Image (cartoon, rainbow, N blue to C red; front, side, top):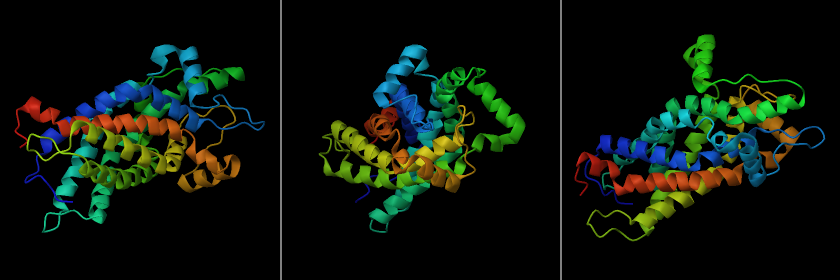
Length: 310
C-alpha cells in the first residue's frame, strides 16, 4: 500500500485521537459496562447467574441502578481515554510512516508490526484506566451479590481507589493486570490496523485531492475491523477483566496470573466462557472505532489548528 503523506505531523494526530476517544466513549459506555458485568460474573455451583445475556444485563442494571448507573466509571475513562486513544492512533501512524520501505510501500508484516508497537505503547495509559474503570463498572454486581448473603460493600470512588492502591503498592498498584492488558491490546492492534487500512483503501476517495477515503468508507472500515479484532481477542479481554477485578462477589474464584486464569476458566466454565460479552464487546468496539477513525480522517484537529492537510 502506498503511503500518501510526505511528512509526519504528530500534534494534530494526538488531538484527533483525543477528540475521537471522548466522543466514542460517551456514546458506547453503557454497553461497555454491561460487557464488564457479563465477563466478570461466574456461574454458581447450581448454574445460577445474575445476568442471562446482554439484554437481560442491560435491563437489570438500568432497573436497579438507573440511567446514571449505566455510566458508573465513565469519568475515569473519559479522563484517560484522550491520552490512550491519542497514543494508540498517533503511534500507529508514526510507526507506519517510519516502517515504510525505500519504495514508500508498507507490506502487511510491517503494518502488523506498526499496529503491535502502537498497542504496546498504549498500555502505559490503558492498564490503570481499565483497572479503575472495571472496579467502578462491576461495583453494582458485587454489591448486589453481597446483599444476597447479608453483607454490604462500601462504596468508593475511582480517586479513593487509585489513592488506596498507590499507598499500598506504589505506582505498580495501578498496573495490576499489565501482562493481560498487553496481550489483549497488542493482539488487537496487530489485527485491527492492517485490516482497517486494507478495507479503507478499497473504498472511493474524497474529491478534495487529499487522496483519503470518503466519510462512510472510513466509518464502515473502522466498524468492521474493530468488530473482527474485538471478537478475535475476546478471550484475552475476559482474562484481563477477571485479573483486574479487585473485589470479587461472594464465592467467586481468584486467579494468580494469566496462565492460572486460562486454565481455571476453561476447567470450571468451559471454552464458551472466553467469549462472554463477545457480542457486547463487538457492539462497543464497532462504533467506538468507527467514530474514532471518522474524526481522525476528517481531520477535525487540523481544522481547529488551521493546518492544511493537502
